Amino acid sequence: MKTTTLRTVCCLLSLLPVLAGGCTRKAVEAPQPPSENAPPPFVGGDMERSVIRLPDPDGKWEFEARSDHVEMLGAEGPFVLRPAECRYQRPGEAPVLMTADQAWIDKVAQRLELEGSVTVAYADWLLETERLEYDLKTGEVVARGRTKWSFSRDRGPESPHRDPSEEEDR
Amino acid sequence: MTKPFALMLALTLTATCLTAPAAGGERVGAKMAFREAHIISQLVRGPITGPWEFSDHVTVSGSGITMTCDRLKVWPSPDRRGLARLEAVGNIVVESSYRAEDKTEWKVLGKAESATYDFATGQGVLLGKVRFQATNAADQTTLSVTADKMIYDAKTASVRFERKDNQVHVEWQEPAPEPEPVAAAGSGGVAAGETQD
Image (cartoon, rainbow over all chains, first blue to last red; front, side, top):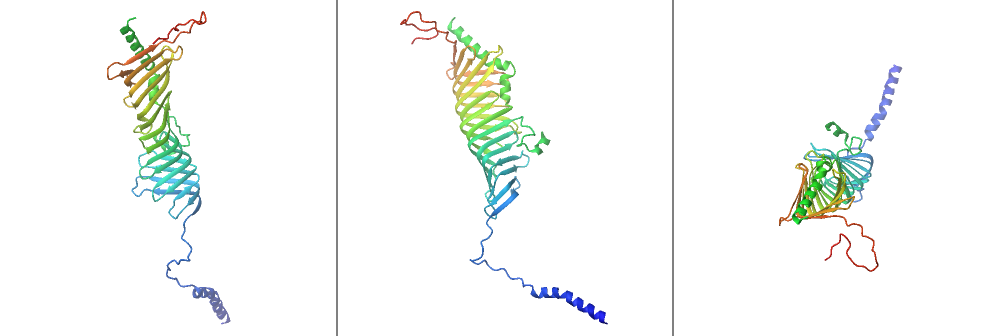
């Protein structure tokens, strides 16, 4: 009889924290409109070793940018990448591979600006410049300042600007 | 030497001079193959897939040919692995050099207002105040041609000059010989090779 009573007391004691937690849980509050004194919404931040992808809503192209350091100037960008490695691909076309000291990606306008030691490799072509604007919607490129556009049939697979996936086609 | 004969000789030499490298089967034809080319300018615009427009101090170089111009439009080949067509406008200057069959080195300079080259047909055209000059690097013999149009056909390795009045101006200039030492001070005269007005 004593043993049964002792077991009952132990069970009640073990349930005590659970019961206590249930009693102290706060009720879910309805969302309140932000007050003027509330902290501002997230406007930006830094990310390390990140990949930014911009898919075309119409599926005509894909864009991807990688960087060791990405600065977000807003929740939806623009993004500042230092340095930057980018890849732009249209179906059935050779990929466009880009590198630069800095890239500015405007997700909304679907525009890309590259600055500093810019290289753009496309098929057997290589563009080298200091400043380049790229309209991702149209594929239109504008390079300003001294720009060198080189063509070489001998640009081999060891080239840092050659996409390895291209080798299957060659 | 009669004047018509001299002109005929000059034209023959022109044709020989221009077609000899191609007849050799490697120089001109190889140049137009362009395994490698560089285009430098201050402004480039166009779709990444081409065609591309270059402007402001444009220089094109590749396989021994250098061309400068104000504006250049370049069409890549359909497979994007070569060139299909070039169109240049404004202050065209083409410089090249080649070795003829007789091993003589020639420096070639061409000037025009516009130029095109189609890689599929192998035809290049210089248009507007065309001035062509080939200089023998060894003895400085110079051949000059002035015309309105120059058509180069890589397939037949031939060059054709055209002028609206059908009179292509050709000059063949031998290098001036070394002037002989003056025998006596104060003596006048005209050195050999010079002309008097």
